[in-house]
Image: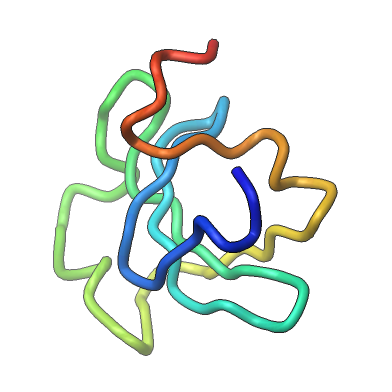
Length: 78
């Protein structure tokens, strides 16, 4: 994905599963991990994904990570 494709509140995929973008900085994005690569939710209680603030840790993705991110519409890249 390109930096401009990330939108707060929208999901994207990586090799580790599905993530939801929670913040967009000048050169980074922050996201929470919502589902594993096989589709199982990371946490059983969906209220943990409500926020901010979030009950789960936000992870930071920078320009080096964007190449491993895919939109939900992309064909299965893995």
